[in-house]
Amino acid sequence: MRAAFSCGNHKEGDAGTSWPALVALGLSEAERSARIGSIGGSDANVILSGDREKILNLWREKRGEQPAVDLSDRLPVALGCWTEPFNRQWYEKISGHGVSMVGLAMECSDYKWRRCTLDGFVDDVGAIFEAKHTSAFAKADEVVERYMPQLQHNMAVAKRDKAVLSVIFGNHKFEIFEVAADWLYQLDLLEAESHFWDCVQNGAEPVPAPVPPPPKPIGTREVCLTGNNAWASAAVDWLENRVAAKTHAAACGIIKSLVEDDVARAFGHGVEARRSKSGAISIREAARSPCDWSIGRSARSLRNSHPPASRKPTPMFKASTSTGRSTMF
Image 1 (tube, one colour):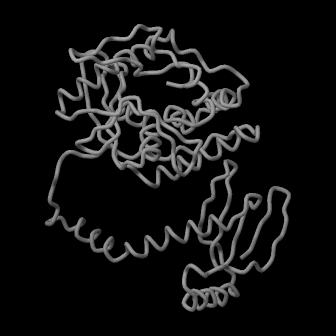
Image 2 (tube, one colour):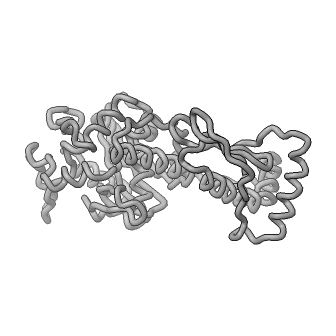
Image 3 (spheres, helix red, strand yellow):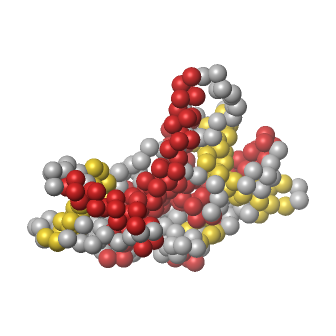
């Protein structure tokens, strides 16, 4: 939950769990302060929701312009928090895996404004643990999609490559989902969170980020597709092009890093990078004129004569526009 409510503030004894009183589920002043001054897993769900009103409300809360929403009188929220100990114990009973580090607060080593509070950690599978209690009528894929930003955020902060989502549906169904860390999704999430946090710091209203397609849960079956012709063809293509794919990804990172904050479009050597209204940078092949081909040949010669680390495009000219600078390299 967000800044006005907390799950997992309970004590476990040798004989089982001592269920907390409802008043014990609230956050302390120190915990509220920590949540206002950072972005946590549940904040990630809001930031990547695409819901402008929710994002603005969270932004105002982080800036201290409005109090956090009091969720203590909302049954679904309170019930989810109160049943979290049972959820965890039921997972341990069904899976045979123990859950440790319950309620551990972590801070990202790379971005100090990113933090998370773990529902636990599953040592046997090396995964963070997240417990949810949702409607009996909720669809499993929608539940996984709803909490995907939180799972990927927590994995990024904790530097783990797997998460376990333990879900109770109403009072009649229980399901376990394993989700792998997806670096592409995490990059989109980090970009959205960075934009949001910059807005918290400078006072500009945040713009909802494009919502990326959520990764799918890890499958449980193993199949051999050696006799599948389509698989064989795709496998050959993958093996032959994996180095090129890594080179392409590295090139995308370099190109984006060269586009300064006030540049709306940068172009050169047959490639252009455009900045969207939300601040995201997209790269595509640019339309070329006949004279560009000689430039392209020169670029290839330059690339072959210099190692990647020392390769720095020389700006040919810079022109200003009313909506942002357009730069040619």
